[in-house]
Image 1 (tube, one colour):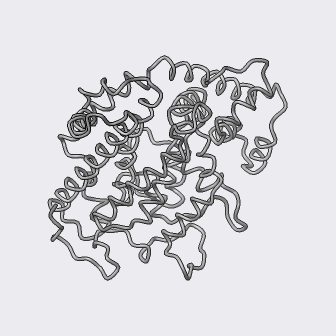
Image 2: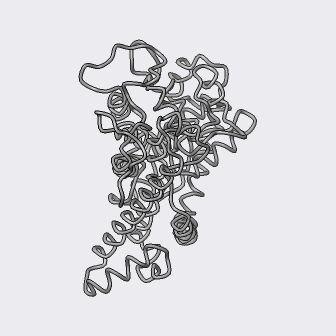
Image 3: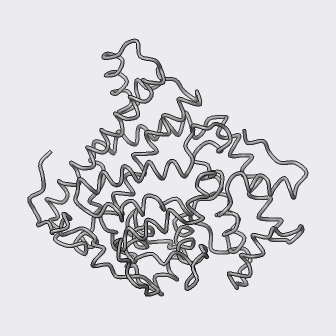
Length: 395
């Protein structure tokens, strides 16, 4: 893999196009700088010590957390994403701490029970501004986390907030109101790309769940190793492992497939990103934002393979009877909780009462959505059991 020769590197070892903590646009609420940490390291630490981060431990990735101890949760997934994001950032010589911050916080806005929770909340919030998990992440780090004496939220750097909002690319079209409101308060330039650190975190998310959902699906016996022969990347890895270790135990074969798939995807992204950098020739983070394309991404060939993996997982895992049964039960729980809170037909939990006071808002549906989105799987289930005679079994 050839090293870059298109730009200069600073004394800090970062490329000229990296986001630098020393050049950050700062924080919405001014604070003294830390004498021991860079601004981006401080953001990472605040993210790790947040309530939202701890809640990820009991939020569904694909399987509800109590189904098994070894399945991914939002927390373990986020940690795995952060490892890959740091590897990519290091290879491209951009700020690893910023990439890690974005990887660790990218799923803050997810509801309990995975994507079904988001889908149902978005439906229930129709007419009230809808629900979007990326917009919810911004709400959490700018207002809903309420721990500090002098401000709401985590008061993160502009670059971290920009990355949370734009890690998947420019925000155009049907823009969530949360983004519009914050952009008016502190412009994030929604129509441009984010820095390379955010792009590293975004593609790391794809790499992590494509590999680890295969692992969890095999562990749950939703499909078998023999089903992977025709799956892109996984099938190639299976052939190599089978030829080299014909008598290897299945759980070791599974691990070998996952690690080889991650390696192949990471190396593809690095090679492709370096080619894109050679073409674009950015000399600043601003050049990256305004170049009109995503730089850190899969090659065209890998995009086809990744689409094949996602297609397999969609058919065999995400739409499997076991997962769909969980989705149906989760829909009932989310829908029932929202409606009973909205109609005030039962005793409101203390958490919702406190949030209503803190938000000082007449927008009751949005406050309810904030409250439900912040729930862990276990809290949503127990709250439903408190208020209703029967609760679906999600196991």
